[in-house]
Amino acid sequence: MLPVLGRSVDATSTKACSNALSSTSARSTRARPNGTCSLFAGAVALIALAVTTSLAWAQSNYPSRPITIVVGFTAGGSTDIVARMIAEELRKAWGQPVVVDNKPGAAGNIGAALVARAKPDGYTLLIGSVGPLAINASLYANMPYDNLKDFTPICLIVHVPNMLVVNPKTMPVNTFAEFVTLAKAHPGKYFFSSTGVGTSSHLSGELLKSLTGIEATHVPYKGAVALNDLLAGEQVHFMFATIPSVVEFVRAGRLRALAVTSKTRSASMPNVPTVAESGFPDFEASSWFGLLGPADLPRDIAVKLQAEVARALNVPEIRESLIQQGADPVASTPEEFAAYIRSETIKWEKVVRASGAKAE
Image 1: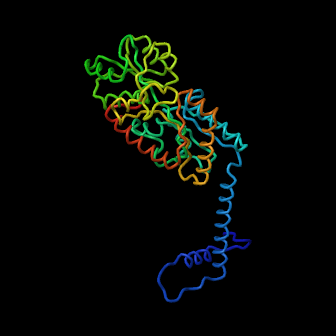
Image 2 (image 1 turned 60 degrees about the vertical axis):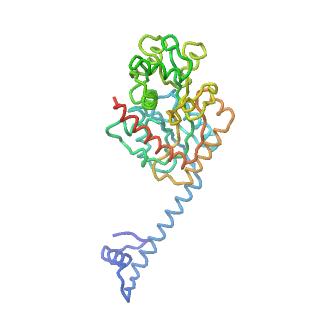
Image 3 (image 1 turned 30 degrees about the horizontal axis):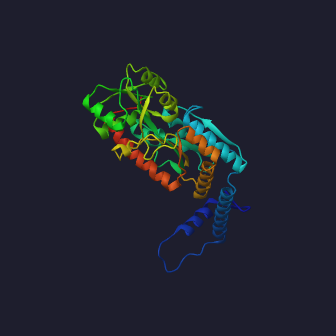
């Protein structure tokens, strides 16, 4: 028995009602639903109205409870730092707690998968990066989510360009053009380090090889060891590294900066040219961080979040802090971010395939 507004409707009446309501056959005379059916139809309409009204109220009053921002990497890293800056600004603006929840593992896939499976109500969000949102789809044989279908892009927050640096003792060049000329003159002689297979550091080097035609050997490391060996100058000769990790060594003369990997010069290192302006206009290999929700996130919630992130990125203290850490604020629209993820996925798929890189 199904309760309908205080009455009981038996299964036979329910079936008859359902048939009467759903029939679409062309007939000259329609059977008029009985009283029970009319009540059933009315109840369905009232329930639909109540649900719609409830959803509209929840969206218009968003946020009405704490928000969780998932980060697929450990606390203290670049993704985490950006997430905590944004979380604090959202908290101050809306008066609701915004908690950063670190879920590291599988190059960011674990945290991203958690958000992909979450309810699309705006209370579980992701600060994602180029790895889990563009590179890993080609790097991993089995992904726990579809990076193009399982998320609602909200805002591209920052670009974090890598910087091509050399050890001047072992690669005595002063410009990107000199670097390419030297590397081409000695095929296979030079080695480049990275922070791991499939990372932005690694694939920036592979993209360089593809576009310039130089031959260089990749040497993967675990994290900061890659930089240590570059500084030692015994096994590796150049590297694509995040600006904050190498800027002090550049200023001290222990490393030489030749180019940044973004389309435009970095605000944190404005005197260093881009690879693109050095003769290779198609070269762009930045890391980046953006805010996303699960698929089917209501548009008004996405728009509200984007507007608040854009406002936060214009706060002078926030903007300056990001620039000092080598990040260039962006504040894209949801549509721009979605298109960017698609283009990045296509670009890195080609690079991964050409390099033969596989997840370790």
